[in-house]
Each structure stands twice: as C-alpha cells, then as structure tokens.
Image 1 (cartoon, rainbow, N blue to C red):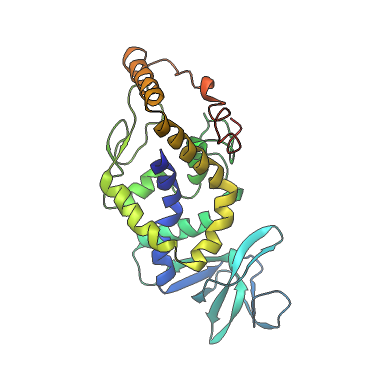
Image 2 (image 1 turned 30 degrees about the vertical axis):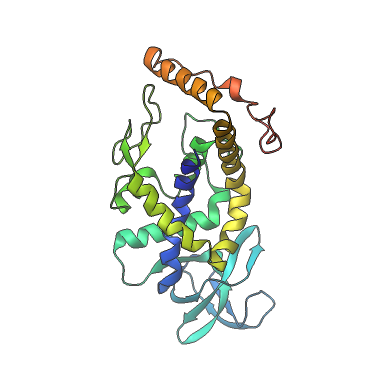
Length: 275
C-alpha cells in the first residue's frame, strides 16, 4: 500500500531532480510584467521591469519562499537583457533549454503542480471532492489538472502497470473484478529518482509545505494500515480472503468499505486518521 503513495508523489518527483541540475529558461506570465530586484524581497531596490511574455534565463530557483497576495513561491534569480536580479517565481513558467517539446511540456506541468496544487479542481465528475482529506482517487483527480495518467505514460519509457484492468495509456477506475499490479521496473525507477532528492535542501524546502498540506495525512494512513495488517497476519489473511471472494462471486456489487471507516480507532495509531 505504501507504493501507491510513492507513485502519486512521483508525479511531482519525476522531473524534479533533472529540473534542479539543468539550465533553465523562463517566460513571464504576469499580465502587468514582473519587477526584477537586487535581492529576494519586495523591499529591495528595483533593477528592471520585465514585460509579460518576455523570455528570461533562470539562474537560481532556491530563493526564500514567500506568500504575496495569496500566491506562494520561492524567489528566482534571473538574467534579462544583460541585467541580473531576483523576481517572485510564481509568475515565471520555467522550461529546460534545448529540450524536446515533450520534455519541456513535462517540466512546465511539473512545476505548475508544485506551485498550484492548492488551487486545483476536481477533474472526476463522478467522484465527491474530499480533497485534501480524501483518499488516493480524489488526490489523482486533482493531480489531473496538471498531469494525467496518459501524459505520464507517454513521457515514461516503461509501463506503469504489468497487469490488471488498466491499459498503457488509460486507467479503468470502475473495474469490478481486478486491480492494477505495478510494474516492478517502474517502482525501482521511481525509487532511484526519489532517494537522491531527499538530500537536496531546495527540494525539501519546496516539498515540505505541499507534503504537509496535501499528502502527509494520506501517506500516514497507508503507512499505519500496512503496519497494523503486518502485525496481525491472521486478520490480514481473513480480510484478503473476504475481498478475493467478493471479486469472484459478486464483481458487480460494491464492497462494504464503510465497516473500515474507523479501522484505526482501536489501535495505537488512532490519532493518525479519524476515518
């Protein structure tokens, strides 16, 4: 179950390590332009005004994180027409220099997700919007605003699933008799990308707030559920047998999930999740 959290979090992660090590360009998206300043912060002297849609060279993305008019972003160090300075990063769309259109598209989507997940909408009309307090499906329904399963599958060179109801480029979220089995190569690929980033100070600064607000509760729920099941093998086997029997005998009927609403309330992890 912990793998599911890693897979979803990888939507942010996949391009981040590359993003940090490559030369970047940027385009200004603020309608009134963007002020270039001597140092990060609105109180510092102006260097220049960069007009809307101007292209800049991004020298550093690890400036202090600030909230300005409800928008949260780090300050970026930029070079524009021979002048260098700092500008508020929320209104700068970044992309790698001299890369394919797919690579550029991926990074633009990835960075937008980093900055704007809290403003995302539910893109699954048949799913009630519990975000950010819901489960894996509603989390994916919000991630779709930036990057869906089809796009990620086309970007990757290896299949995400090895078997199950999902195809290479489409998810079947209404399957009643089967579920997806992740491709081990894909999981190892994610792990290989993920571990080095944990040592990157800028990644930790950028990801901590997003993780705490939108991922931590879900990740902890999966983690402690895994621990509870592993600590009680007989209970785990009984539940697995019951679910397998349901798939075989009543694939069209909904599984009775409501009985698990307070699954953790009688364990030492009761404070992690209230339902």
